[in-house]
Image 1 (tube, rainbow, N blue to C red):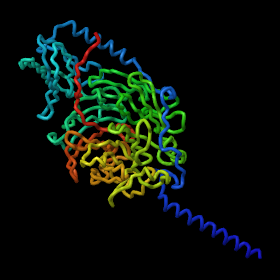
Image 2 (cartoon, one colour; image 1 turned 90 degrees about the horizontal axis):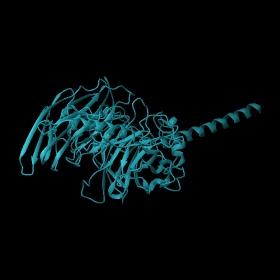
Image 3 (cartoon, rainbow, N blue to C red; image 1 turned 135 degrees about the horizontal axis):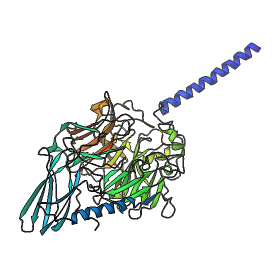
Image 4 (spheres, rainbow, N blue to C red; image 1 turned 180 degrees about the horizontal axis):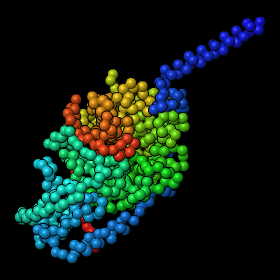
Length: 568
C-alpha cells in the first residue's frame, strides 16, 4: 500500500509538471522569445487605462524646470562693446573693411565685415570655394549705408578669398576682395570623407552634423568642414522659424547639457534657457529633442525626477519668459504594466519608453512621437493629448488599444523596431485621404515584433497612412541592401529634402572592422534609390558618444534678412 501510494503521488506530481510545461510553451509561442535586449512585455489581457489622453498640467500647476539665464548675454554685451570700440577707432570702407574673425569667440570659421558706403547699396558676400560647387554666397535685399555683414563658410587652415559686391539703386556695382586666414581644426575633431558626391544633384546647403556629444559642425559636398562651434553640443541643433539656431550646450567643465541657446551662425546669443532637474545626475537633461510650436514656445523632452522613470516626460517652455507652462508624462497614455513590468534594455534606469523624437504637424496641431523602447511611432493632438493612431507591431497590446493600431497593407510590410526621427512629408500622391511620413527604422526589436531580420540592417522608410481607414503601407525605403554596413543599433535620422525630393539618412552608430563610423547618405526617390552623396564620419570610439546623432541639410545663411547690430 505504501509503495502504491508513493507511485500515485509520483504520477500526480508528473501530471502537474507536464501541465505546467504545456502552459509554459503555449505562453512562449504566444508572446515570443524574450532575450536580454527585449522587454518582458505585457499580456493581451491587461486592462487599458481609462483614458487615452494625457493629463496636462496647465499654467500655475507645473513644476518650474526652466528659466531664462542672462549670464551669456551679459558677457556678450561686453564683447560687443569692445568690438564696436575697435571699429569706431578707424574709418572703414568697402575697399578697406573692418574684418573680425570669429567675432563671438565660438565659431572659428566665421567673420564679421563692417564698413560704410556713401550711397545706399545692397550687398552680396561670397567665400570662394575650392571648386566650382564650393562657393558660399549670400545676397541682402535691403539698401543701407552702414553694413555689418556675416561672412560664413570659411575653410579651416586656409587663406580664404572673400568678395563683397555692392550695388546701388542705379545698378552701379563695386567690388572688394580680401583674404581671411583661419586656424586648423582642433586635434580631437572627427574625420570626414566622402566616397561619393554629385553636387549638381544634391539638395542645396551644407550637411550639418549634430553629435551625441562635442562638436556640431557642417561640411560641404567634398566633406570639407565649413562651419563649427567650439561650444559643446548634444542632440539639439535646429533652425527656428526666425532663422536662429536652437543649440543645446553646457558650461565648460560641466557634465550636464542643461542650457538651450537661441543663437545665430556667428555665435551671437539672443536667449539662453536653463533647465534644472533636481536629483538628476546624468548628462542628458534634455535627452533627445525640442520642437518649436506655432506660438513660439518650445516643447522639450525631459525626465520626471519625482518618479523612478526617465525619458517619458515633456514640458512646454514659454519663449519670452523661460517659464515652464505645461507638462505631461507618457505614463498617462499607457497601461501601468508597460512601465512597471518593463524588463528590456535600460530597465534598471526606468527607461521604459525612451522618447527620442518630436515633430510638430502644423496642419492639424498634432505631434509625431517616436519611442525606441516601445518600438512605435504615434500621432497625437497637442495640447489636448488625444491619440490619433499608433504605428507598431500588434503584439502585446491590450484590446482597448486595437482601435489605435494601424493595420498594415501588403504581404511584405515591416513594422519599425527601435525607430528614430519621424517627420511629416508633403502630399506626394495627390490624395488628401492619405498622409506620408518618413522615419529611420533602426531595425532592432526592443519590446514587440518577431522579426528575424532584427539587427541585420537599418533603413529610411516612407509610410503612407490613411487615418480614416486606419491603414498603413510602405511606399519607399533605403538601407536593406547595405546590410550590416548600414546598421545602427542606436541613434539615426531620416529627412525629406523639399527642394529636390531627395531623402537623407543618418546611420550614426555602425560597427566596422576598423572601429566605428557614422554614415550620412543622400539618395533620390527611385526604387531602388540612387546614392547622390555619402559622408563617412570616423575617429570616435565605441561608447564615446561622439557619433553623429542626426544630420540636417540647410544653407549657412537663413532665409530671413540678417544684419548684425552691435551694442553701442
